[in-house]
Length: 167
Image (tube, one colour):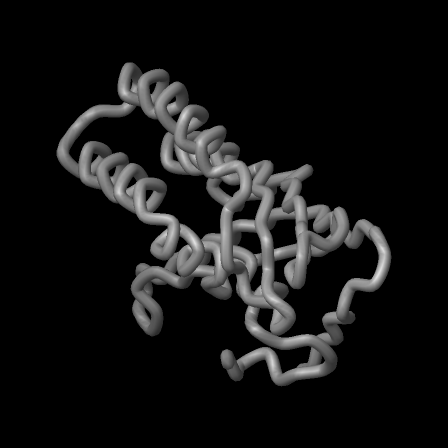
């Protein structure tokens, strides 16, 4: 399967559907499939020197386990990344997070609210991991460029490319 990513020349907005499918215990009678779907509007906002400015706005979520506590928690967590602004280089790789300070503040507020309803060592470890990623911009960029986030779009390629090859 191929996808075409055009080199931005003027401002635009494109809507994409990002879907992650997780199969727990595959090949057993206890196998469960979970789907995480995000509808994301990607706005090209213009040039900044030799770089490109984008806004990634998640406008819709659909989680297959939305009715249980895990699904509710994941949906709340996903809102942390609902509005991200990035700069990319000429090869379409993310080089900087523009609104990193705002995301850190949003995370501080969100984690305080979530820690009232969700407790335990697993939650604390998860919160610590998110905090660590937000404190290290290179790690955050790596997270955003992962295929289960925005790597299908920001992957170091313009033009047509094979989805399973990352530069």
